[in-house]
Image (cartoon, rainbow over the protein chains, first blue to last red):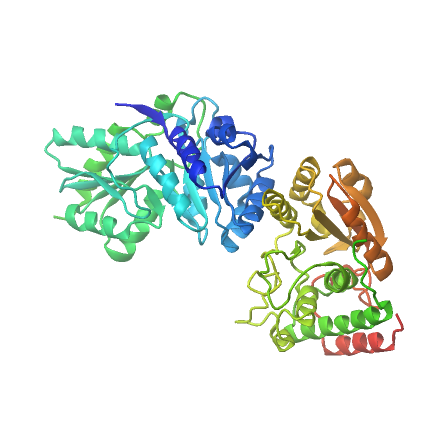
Amino acid sequence: MELIPTRDGFGKELVELGKVNDKIVVLSGDLEDATRAEYFKHEFPDRFFNLGISEQDLVGTAAGLSLMGFIPFATSFAVFLTNRAYDMLRLDICYNKCNVKVVCSHTGVTVGEDGASAQCLEDLALMRVLPEMIVICPVDALEARKATRAITEYVGPTYMRTSRAPFPVITKEEDPFVIGQANIMREGKDVTLIGCGILVSECLQAAEILKKEGIEVRVVNMHTIKPIDVKMILDSAKKTGAIVSAEEHQVHGGLGSAIAEVLAKNYPIPLEMIAVQDTFGETGNPQQLLEKYGLKDKNIVEAARKVIKRKKG
Amino acid sequence: MVNSKTVDIDALKVKARQFRREILEILHAAGSGHPGGSLSAVEILISLYEYKMNYRPQEPQWEERDRLIISKGHATAGIYVVLANYGYFPKEELKNYRKFGSMLQGHAYKQVPGIEFSTGSLGHGLAVANGIALGAKMLGKNFKVYCLLGDGEIQEGSIWEAAMSAGHRKLDNLCAIVDYNKVQENGPTNEIKNLEPLSEKWKSFGWQTTEVIGHNFGVLMRALDEFERIKDKPYVIIAHTIKGKGVSFMEGEAKWHGKAPNAEQLQQALQELDNSDK
């Protein structure tokens, strides 16, 4: 199985799109080498703007460019762009409904050795609470390419998170990517594991382990956190009666919370959430950190057993 | 020769007085809003719309128009009165200022014809203006971009990020105007976070700067004319103004930053404007 960071998928696709769409412009906060926005910079230097270490400037400038009919990609690390420039994302991009694509790398604990200050664990929560913003977390580099294309066609404020660490490529070229439509990766009737990003791979591994215990598992790749795929969640709830959510993100406010909102309002069933339990990250390599923060297949297996027990009948 | 419009300055002074009346009336009718920073910007706005800017009020999206970003987005009493008077929307709408369901939202709102961008949280407009200016250059457009800033507003670091960018990228199609009325919500700017030496700051960021009395039409227009002659640098006009200009009990007063006049105060203010000879 190939291992490719999703930031690479994004960076490469942006170049392909730039070749056919001269409205695309790309902005960075001096991190284009790390976010892979630099691929675009090398091909189209006249359409690339490094705003330096100034995220608020970056977002405001992107808004202004969008008023001139461009499709700006505002790129940086998630911790910097979503936190520091939040008022600009809120007011300039969302309230003004600017067609700006905010694409941030270095999300989750798999950022690794840089540690807590660089590991963004709150971006899904922050972005999904903003009106007008759609929120996407591609599962692998191949999906990241499709997602980049999809968000370019979509008109409106967009947030997409990408990874620094290599993710297993688990999708195929022919798999569809439609904003707001989750994909079933594996079918089963006893429990549903709904994940995003690298946690989907962990869910698939967990499913294999559970199968040996006679537990049939549905695995869903919920790449769009907003608008959340309500149909998929309710279908899974009705068919399997128990759900485990899994994300490289804080437990408060991310994918798990979004799923909980849908279930509580429509079809309450037991839900367990695999996520970072309200702590900051730390220095380590991606695997060490996934282990430490309970984001591995074995944690998902344990959660699945627990949630099945909680099922009534 | 750039702009040889002949201007009747006395007529503009009459207009300024009339706009001040309307600003106070709509603030009173709304029961809330920002008189201080609206009244201080009147001559600046008239100079732009009467004399300098290229625009079509019946066609607010005309592609070749000059753009004005109201970064000090709370000064809506001022800008909405100006836009209505210059034909962007019917004056009857002004009585609905800050009323539930009205397009005349409390802070600058993009749905109002003539408002380019919704603002209201300070420190946002200059980067947005930069983006428009950059985009204009990329598309080979010749229109100008103006950005009206408050002085308290430029305590926001984001303004200086944008100022650095404009200087670095030599955005000579960009003119910022600082409504330097020296007073912010809770006191004088020089007591809260001193901005001086202000002109030197902008210069050091790569801007061409000028300072004018912001209530003097002649010098404002000359300063705006100067904009055409500047190459390879953005331009800032630091307009020394008086917060609450035109109403004796409001002038220079922090407490009139964000409070609407009651009926009695309105009458007193209107009387003063009627009696004034400036």
